[in-house]
Amino acid sequence: MKIVSKNQPYAALQPDQTLIIVRPQVGCPEPSAELERAAEGFEALSRRKEFLASRALLLETSSQLLGTDVALEHLRREESGRLAFTHQMQTELRFNLTHSAETVGVAFAVGQTVGVDCEQIVRFGNELKPREQKWLSPEEYDHLESQAKDLVAEQLCLLWTIKEAVTKKSGHGFASGFKTINTLLNQLGVACFKNENEFLSVALPENCTQLLIDAPGWQAVEANSVIKA
Image 1 (cartoon, rainbow, N blue to C red):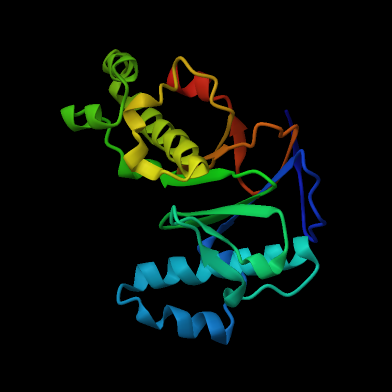
Image 2: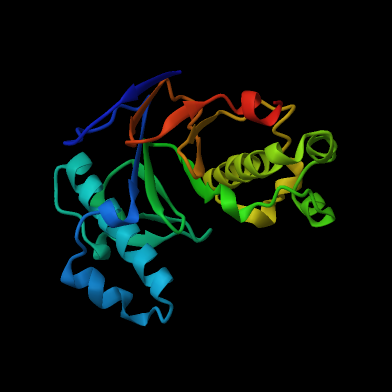
């Protein structure tokens, strides 16, 4: 698979292309009045900011990709809870959103699902605790036990984003079993990226041959080089 840097404006995607766009929350498009009204129901300021930034980025970028104005009314929830475009949009474009305390990302693909997750490294401690066995495979847990403490937080963060992206792509989420996803043994079709404070992983469609990325400040990383350091 080829990774290609991409800048706005965005053109319609080909079936073998996936597009990932990543922005700091403060760098997302200005939310519309419609979005501001929709966010009034969030009591927590952090949750409101995440909603506004992620939806503003999604609506602006999907409008470019589809060549028509996309609004909140053009979004629906599937039975799995995943966001999708309404049937009235008559599009094969699929997407997935992610956000952390600092970052917002959206991934697009044509005709097939895609999953993306971003997490801050600081959320994960350098001490491997028994509770991690709830979501790490036995092989992953044993491997991390053998690592120097200063490597554990980064490895835990990357493993989490990979597993989260894979389950978001499937539409089943955490309940489908993070523990059964073994990043040490399986070829999962995931592209990974890192900035100074975070990891981001994209679970790609099976037919993807080209990943277009618009993510200033992010660098591609080989998952094995981090996990098996």
